[in-house]
Length: 94
Image (cartoon, rainbow, N blue to C red; front, side, top):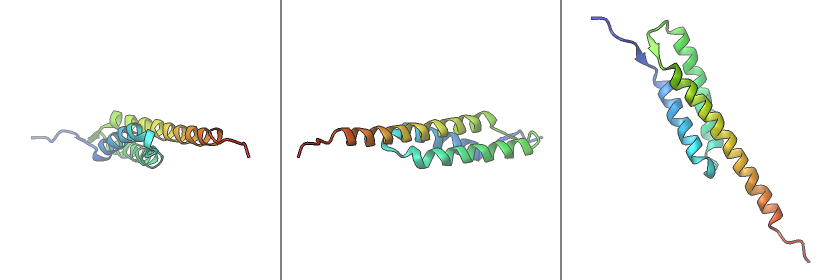
């Protein structure tokens, strides 16, 4: 019997980390989780391309990469929002 193609574990990890970065972006965890997901997705895509069909999961890797980038951007935007809100919330009366 011939073995079927296996799904790359790094692609699955990229997807899970990308989802976590997007979900936890309001806590600013996406600043750390987003780049991790993007790097894992990128490396996984390279491994899948070099696998010659024995490794699959390209869609999972791309989804993890995109979600990681979106989670990072959402966290940075949320952090910037809170910094601006903090600066405008102060009273300037002496």
